[in-house]
Image 1 (cartoon, rainbow, N blue to C red):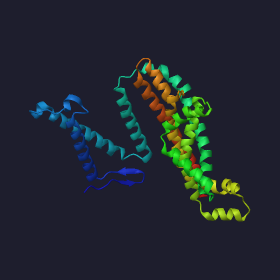
Image 2: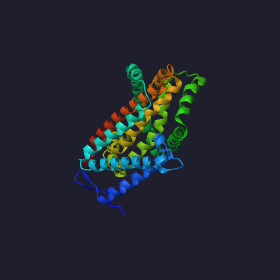
Image 3: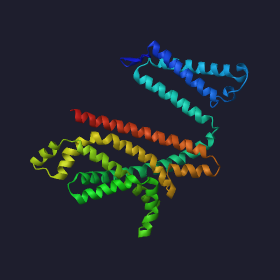
Image 4: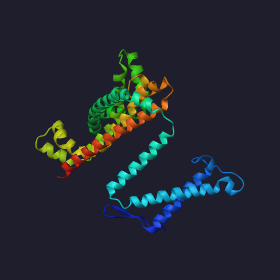
Length: 324
Protein backbone atom coordinates (compact mmCIF):
# COMPACT_ATOMS: atom_id res chain seq x y z
CA UNK A 1 0.00 0.00 0.00
CA UNK A 2 1.33 3.41 -0.97
CA UNK A 3 1.48 6.12 1.64
CA UNK A 4 0.28 9.49 0.36
CA UNK A 5 2.49 12.53 0.39
CA UNK A 6 2.04 15.01 3.23
CA UNK A 7 2.12 18.77 3.59
CA UNK A 8 4.35 20.48 6.14
CA UNK A 9 3.68 24.19 6.26
CA UNK A 10 3.30 25.20 2.63
CA UNK A 11 5.71 22.56 1.27
CA UNK A 12 4.92 19.13 -0.10
CA UNK A 13 6.87 16.25 1.45
CA UNK A 14 6.98 13.01 -0.56
CA UNK A 15 7.33 9.73 1.31
CA UNK A 16 9.65 7.10 -0.21
CA UNK A 17 6.92 4.56 -0.94
CA UNK A 18 4.83 7.25 -2.61
CA UNK A 19 7.75 8.22 -4.86
CA UNK A 20 8.48 4.58 -5.73
CA UNK A 21 4.85 3.88 -6.52
CA UNK A 22 4.59 7.01 -8.62
CA UNK A 23 7.71 6.02 -10.57
CA UNK A 24 6.34 2.53 -11.23
CA UNK A 25 2.98 3.88 -12.34
CA UNK A 26 4.50 6.46 -14.69
CA UNK A 27 6.95 3.91 -16.11
CA UNK A 28 4.20 1.40 -16.85
CA UNK A 29 2.05 4.11 -18.39
CA UNK A 30 4.75 5.41 -20.72
CA UNK A 31 5.96 1.91 -21.61
CA UNK A 32 2.41 0.86 -22.50
CA UNK A 33 1.93 3.97 -24.62
CA UNK A 34 5.31 3.38 -26.27
CA UNK A 35 4.24 -0.09 -27.36
CA UNK A 36 1.43 1.45 -29.38
CA UNK A 37 3.91 3.54 -31.34
CA UNK A 38 1.67 6.59 -31.16
CA UNK A 39 4.09 9.05 -29.55
CA UNK A 40 7.69 8.39 -30.46
CA UNK A 41 7.24 7.16 -34.02
CA UNK A 42 9.20 4.34 -35.64
CA UNK A 43 11.39 3.69 -32.61
CA UNK A 44 8.35 2.73 -30.57
CA UNK A 45 6.38 0.94 -33.24
CA UNK A 46 6.06 -2.73 -32.23
CA UNK A 47 7.63 -5.31 -34.48
CA UNK A 48 7.98 -9.07 -34.53
CA UNK A 49 11.46 -10.50 -34.14
CA UNK A 50 14.53 -9.85 -32.07
CA UNK A 51 13.80 -7.35 -29.25
CA UNK A 52 16.97 -5.42 -30.05
CA UNK A 53 15.88 -5.04 -33.68
CA UNK A 54 12.24 -4.43 -32.93
CA UNK A 55 12.98 -1.44 -30.73
CA UNK A 56 11.89 -3.03 -27.45
CA UNK A 57 15.09 -1.96 -25.71
CA UNK A 58 14.62 1.53 -27.08
CA UNK A 59 11.08 1.68 -25.79
CA UNK A 60 12.24 0.48 -22.40
CA UNK A 61 15.03 3.09 -22.27
CA UNK A 62 12.74 5.95 -23.34
CA UNK A 63 10.08 4.99 -20.79
CA UNK A 64 12.73 4.71 -18.08
CA UNK A 65 14.26 8.11 -18.82
CA UNK A 66 10.88 9.84 -19.07
CA UNK A 67 9.72 8.26 -15.80
CA UNK A 68 12.90 9.27 -13.95
CA UNK A 69 12.69 12.85 -15.20
CA UNK A 70 8.99 13.03 -14.35
CA UNK A 71 9.40 11.74 -10.79
CA UNK A 72 12.54 13.81 -10.11
CA UNK A 73 10.66 16.89 -11.30
CA UNK A 74 7.78 16.20 -8.90
CA UNK A 75 10.12 15.52 -5.98
CA UNK A 76 12.11 18.72 -6.54
CA UNK A 77 8.96 20.79 -6.90
CA UNK A 78 7.80 19.40 -3.55
CA UNK A 79 10.58 21.28 -1.75
CA UNK A 80 9.30 24.65 -2.97
CA UNK A 81 6.69 26.83 -1.24
CA UNK A 82 3.12 26.38 -2.45
CA UNK A 83 3.09 29.53 -4.60
CA UNK A 84 6.35 28.57 -6.28
CA UNK A 85 5.05 25.04 -6.90
CA UNK A 86 2.02 26.41 -8.73
CA UNK A 87 4.14 28.83 -10.78
CA UNK A 88 6.68 26.15 -11.79
CA UNK A 89 3.98 23.66 -12.82
CA UNK A 90 2.18 26.33 -14.84
CA UNK A 91 5.39 27.26 -16.64
CA UNK A 92 6.21 23.62 -17.39
CA UNK A 93 2.74 22.89 -18.70
CA UNK A 94 2.80 26.05 -20.78
CA UNK A 95 6.12 25.06 -22.33
CA UNK A 96 4.74 21.62 -23.19
CA UNK A 97 1.60 23.21 -24.58
CA UNK A 98 3.52 25.66 -26.79
CA UNK A 99 6.01 23.01 -27.91
CA UNK A 100 3.08 20.90 -29.07
CA UNK A 101 1.87 23.76 -31.27
CA UNK A 102 5.43 24.48 -32.41
CA UNK A 103 5.53 21.06 -34.08
CA UNK A 104 2.80 22.24 -36.46
CA UNK A 105 5.36 24.33 -38.41
CA UNK A 106 3.33 27.52 -38.05
CA UNK A 107 3.98 30.73 -39.95
CA UNK A 108 4.76 33.16 -37.13
CA UNK A 109 5.18 36.03 -39.56
CA UNK A 110 1.59 35.52 -40.71
CA UNK A 111 0.41 35.47 -37.08
CA UNK A 112 2.34 38.67 -36.31
CA UNK A 113 0.82 40.34 -39.35
CA UNK A 114 -2.79 39.48 -38.44
CA UNK A 115 -2.56 39.75 -34.64
CA UNK A 116 -3.15 43.55 -34.41
CA UNK A 117 -6.36 43.25 -36.43
CA UNK A 118 -7.51 40.29 -34.34
CA UNK A 119 -7.08 42.36 -31.18
CA UNK A 120 -8.47 45.70 -32.37
CA UNK A 121 -11.45 44.19 -34.20
CA UNK A 122 -12.04 40.68 -32.87
CA UNK A 123 -11.28 41.14 -29.17
CA UNK A 124 -13.12 44.46 -28.96
CA UNK A 125 -16.21 43.02 -30.67
CA UNK A 126 -16.16 39.87 -28.54
CA UNK A 127 -15.90 41.83 -25.28
CA UNK A 128 -18.53 44.32 -26.46
CA UNK A 129 -21.05 41.59 -27.30
CA UNK A 130 -20.29 39.63 -24.13
CA UNK A 131 -20.42 42.61 -21.76
CA UNK A 132 -23.76 43.88 -23.04
CA UNK A 133 -25.18 40.36 -23.06
CA UNK A 134 -24.16 39.60 -19.47
CA UNK A 135 -25.65 42.92 -18.31
CA UNK A 136 -28.99 42.22 -19.99
CA UNK A 137 -28.90 38.60 -18.84
CA UNK A 138 -28.37 39.72 -15.23
CA UNK A 139 -31.46 41.96 -15.38
CA UNK A 140 -33.49 39.13 -16.90
CA UNK A 141 -32.17 36.77 -14.22
CA UNK A 142 -33.23 39.03 -11.34
CA UNK A 143 -36.72 39.43 -12.76
CA UNK A 144 -36.97 35.71 -13.53
CA UNK A 145 -35.73 34.70 -10.07
CA UNK A 146 -38.24 36.96 -8.34
CA UNK A 147 -41.00 35.58 -10.55
CA UNK A 148 -40.06 31.99 -9.77
CA UNK A 149 -40.08 32.77 -6.05
CA UNK A 150 -43.43 34.52 -6.31
CA UNK A 151 -46.70 32.98 -5.17
CA UNK A 152 -48.35 34.47 -8.24
CA UNK A 153 -49.12 31.55 -10.53
CA UNK A 154 -49.06 33.66 -13.71
CA UNK A 155 -45.59 35.09 -12.99
CA UNK A 156 -44.22 31.69 -11.98
CA UNK A 157 -45.62 30.04 -15.11
CA UNK A 158 -44.02 32.60 -17.43
CA UNK A 159 -40.66 32.40 -15.66
CA UNK A 160 -40.62 28.60 -15.56
CA UNK A 161 -41.62 28.35 -19.24
CA UNK A 162 -38.88 30.82 -20.18
CA UNK A 163 -36.14 28.98 -18.29
CA UNK A 164 -37.29 25.60 -19.59
CA UNK A 165 -37.45 26.75 -23.22
CA UNK A 166 -34.15 28.64 -23.45
CA UNK A 167 -32.21 26.07 -21.44
CA UNK A 168 -33.68 23.31 -23.57
CA UNK A 169 -32.60 24.66 -26.97
CA UNK A 170 -29.00 24.77 -28.24
CA UNK A 171 -27.61 28.30 -28.29
CA UNK A 172 -26.73 28.02 -31.96
CA UNK A 173 -30.36 27.25 -32.78
CA UNK A 174 -31.48 30.27 -30.74
CA UNK A 175 -29.11 32.50 -32.72
CA UNK A 176 -30.61 31.28 -36.00
CA UNK A 177 -34.20 31.51 -34.76
CA UNK A 178 -33.79 35.10 -33.62
CA UNK A 179 -31.76 36.29 -36.61
CA UNK A 180 -33.92 34.55 -39.23
CA UNK A 181 -37.21 34.33 -37.36
CA UNK A 182 -37.77 37.92 -36.23
CA UNK A 183 -37.77 39.28 -39.82
CA UNK A 184 -40.69 36.91 -40.52
CA UNK A 185 -42.62 38.88 -37.90
CA UNK A 186 -41.60 42.22 -39.37
CA UNK A 187 -38.69 42.94 -37.02
CA UNK A 188 -35.47 43.09 -39.03
CA UNK A 189 -32.44 43.05 -36.74
CA UNK A 190 -28.77 43.29 -37.58
CA UNK A 191 -26.31 40.54 -36.75
CA UNK A 192 -24.84 42.14 -33.62
CA UNK A 193 -28.19 42.92 -31.90
CA UNK A 194 -29.45 39.46 -32.84
CA UNK A 195 -26.36 37.85 -31.31
CA UNK A 196 -26.65 39.93 -28.14
CA UNK A 197 -30.35 39.08 -27.80
CA UNK A 198 -29.70 35.36 -28.25
CA UNK A 199 -26.88 35.32 -25.69
CA UNK A 200 -28.89 37.42 -23.23
CA UNK A 201 -31.97 35.22 -23.39
CA UNK A 202 -30.03 31.97 -23.22
CA UNK A 203 -27.75 32.91 -20.33
CA UNK A 204 -30.52 34.83 -18.62
CA UNK A 205 -32.36 31.52 -18.29
CA UNK A 206 -29.37 29.82 -16.67
CA UNK A 207 -28.64 32.79 -14.42
CA UNK A 208 -32.27 32.92 -13.31
CA UNK A 209 -31.69 29.66 -11.45
CA UNK A 210 -28.43 31.01 -10.01
CA UNK A 211 -30.13 34.13 -8.68
CA UNK A 212 -33.07 32.11 -7.40
CA UNK A 213 -30.75 29.82 -5.44
CA UNK A 214 -28.83 32.80 -4.07
CA UNK A 215 -31.99 34.55 -2.89
CA UNK A 216 -33.35 31.35 -1.35
CA UNK A 217 -30.10 30.91 0.61
CA UNK A 218 -31.04 33.94 2.74
CA UNK A 219 -32.99 33.05 5.85
CA UNK A 220 -36.69 33.82 5.69
CA UNK A 221 -36.36 35.81 8.89
CA UNK A 222 -34.48 38.50 6.97
CA UNK A 223 -37.60 39.15 4.89
CA UNK A 224 -39.82 39.24 7.95
CA UNK A 225 -37.47 41.59 9.82
CA UNK A 226 -37.37 43.97 6.85
CA UNK A 227 -41.12 43.97 6.52
CA UNK A 228 -41.48 44.63 10.25
CA UNK A 229 -39.54 47.90 9.99
CA UNK A 230 -41.61 49.05 7.02
CA UNK A 231 -39.39 48.06 4.05
CA UNK A 232 -41.25 47.31 0.84
CA UNK A 233 -40.38 44.44 -1.47
CA UNK A 234 -38.03 46.39 -3.75
CA UNK A 235 -36.24 48.08 -0.85
CA UNK A 236 -35.88 44.77 0.99
CA UNK A 237 -34.43 43.16 -2.12
CA UNK A 238 -31.95 45.98 -2.80
CA UNK A 239 -30.83 46.72 0.76
CA UNK A 240 -31.12 43.40 2.58
CA UNK A 241 -31.45 40.31 0.40
CA UNK A 242 -29.24 40.90 -2.65
CA UNK A 243 -26.20 42.21 -0.70
CA UNK A 244 -26.23 39.01 1.37
CA UNK A 245 -26.92 36.78 -1.64
CA UNK A 246 -24.09 38.19 -3.76
CA UNK A 247 -21.36 35.96 -2.25
CA UNK A 248 -23.45 32.98 -3.34
CA UNK A 249 -24.36 34.43 -6.73
CA UNK A 250 -21.01 35.82 -7.86
CA UNK A 251 -18.98 32.58 -8.37
CA UNK A 252 -21.45 30.83 -10.69
CA UNK A 253 -22.26 34.14 -12.41
CA UNK A 254 -18.55 34.65 -13.11
CA UNK A 255 -18.43 31.18 -14.60
CA UNK A 256 -21.39 32.03 -16.79
CA UNK A 257 -19.65 35.17 -18.04
CA UNK A 258 -16.55 33.17 -18.96
CA UNK A 259 -18.74 30.62 -20.73
CA UNK A 260 -20.59 33.41 -22.55
CA UNK A 261 -17.27 34.91 -23.65
CA UNK A 262 -16.46 31.64 -25.40
CA UNK A 263 -19.99 30.98 -26.64
CA UNK A 264 -20.01 34.42 -28.29
CA UNK A 265 -18.04 32.66 -31.03
CA UNK A 266 -21.36 31.14 -32.14
CA UNK A 267 -22.61 34.52 -33.35
CA UNK A 268 -19.94 34.29 -36.06
CA UNK A 269 -22.39 32.15 -38.04
CA UNK A 270 -24.51 35.24 -38.69
CA UNK A 271 -21.54 37.40 -39.73
CA UNK A 272 -20.53 39.18 -36.53
CA UNK A 273 -16.86 40.16 -36.79
CA UNK A 274 -15.76 38.60 -33.54
CA UNK A 275 -12.68 36.43 -32.97
CA UNK A 276 -13.97 33.18 -34.46
CA UNK A 277 -15.30 34.87 -37.59
CA UNK A 278 -11.97 36.61 -38.18
CA UNK A 279 -10.03 33.40 -37.54
CA UNK A 280 -11.95 31.68 -40.32
CA UNK A 281 -11.89 34.51 -42.83
CA UNK A 282 -8.25 35.58 -42.34
CA UNK A 283 -6.93 32.04 -42.59
CA UNK A 284 -9.13 31.06 -45.52
CA UNK A 285 -7.37 33.15 -48.17
CA UNK A 286 -3.95 31.53 -47.70
CA UNK A 287 -5.15 28.21 -46.21
CA UNK A 288 -3.40 29.06 -42.94
CA UNK A 289 -6.31 28.08 -40.77
CA UNK A 290 -4.22 26.50 -38.02
CA UNK A 291 -2.25 29.71 -37.42
CA UNK A 292 -5.41 31.72 -36.87
CA UNK A 293 -7.24 29.08 -34.85
CA UNK A 294 -4.33 28.59 -32.44
CA UNK A 295 -3.84 32.36 -32.09
CA UNK A 296 -7.51 32.92 -31.36
CA UNK A 297 -7.54 29.99 -28.92
CA UNK A 298 -4.70 31.59 -26.95
CA UNK A 299 -6.48 34.98 -27.02
CA UNK A 300 -9.66 33.37 -25.62
CA UNK A 301 -7.56 31.70 -22.94
CA UNK A 302 -5.87 34.98 -21.97
CA UNK A 303 -9.22 36.75 -21.71
CA UNK A 304 -10.61 33.91 -19.60
CA UNK A 305 -7.63 34.14 -17.24
CA UNK A 306 -8.20 37.89 -16.85
CA UNK A 307 -11.86 37.28 -16.04
CA UNK A 308 -10.92 34.58 -13.53
CA UNK A 309 -8.61 37.03 -11.75
CA UNK A 310 -11.32 39.71 -11.69
CA UNK A 311 -13.83 37.18 -10.37
CA UNK A 312 -11.39 36.11 -7.66
CA UNK A 313 -10.92 39.72 -6.52
CA UNK A 314 -14.67 40.31 -6.40
CA UNK A 315 -15.21 37.11 -4.41
CA UNK A 316 -12.55 38.15 -1.90
CA UNK A 317 -14.11 41.60 -1.60
CA UNK A 318 -17.57 40.28 -0.80
CA UNK A 319 -16.08 37.53 1.36
CA UNK A 320 -14.49 40.17 3.58
CA UNK A 321 -17.76 42.09 3.80
CA UNK A 322 -19.74 39.04 4.90
CA UNK A 323 -17.10 37.98 7.44
CA UNK A 324 -17.28 41.31 9.28
